[in-house]
Length: 199
Image (cartoon, rainbow, N blue to C red; front, side, top):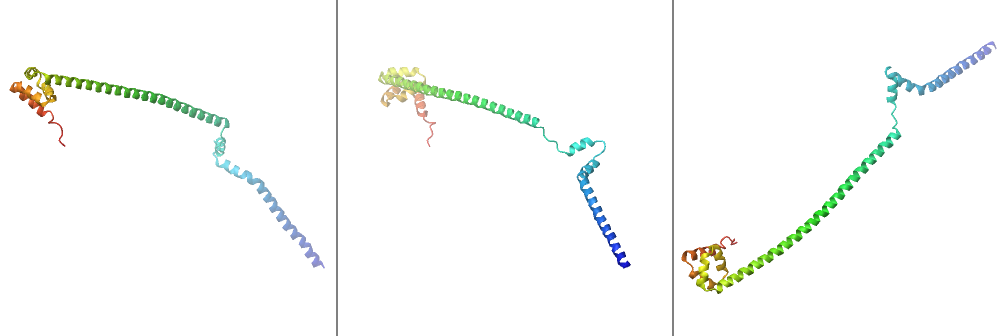
């Protein structure tokens, strides 16, 4: 009986020791949970040199941008873009005005060229008419009188008229010229088309 009492007296002590161990483990776990959040910050502060604690702490955290400065920066960029757009618009307008002026000048130049071409055509026609009349006058003159007149002209000038005259009238005038003059005029008439390409 005494042995049973002794055995039963030992059981509660063992149970108490097991309960105390569990309670101690729970208390240690609770302390660890409470210490853990501050542990990382304490380790970070411990790794920073002692002479720059405040700066290192501020460097460790990313600086949040100042909303007012950010808004000012955006507004400044918008103003710069608007100014560039305005300058480009002014340049485009200036180019458009310059292009219109160039077109006007080109149109005036084309008109002047057409007028000049018309004037030159009229002048050429008038000159051609004058030469035709004068040639006709020489053809109707007495051949001896025409020959005397052609003797006084420059050979190139008289060759031009003789080349335009009817062959019979030109032959009568040539017959009245001095041989040297007739030869010079004949050489000019023969060589007049020598430089024209044959192919």
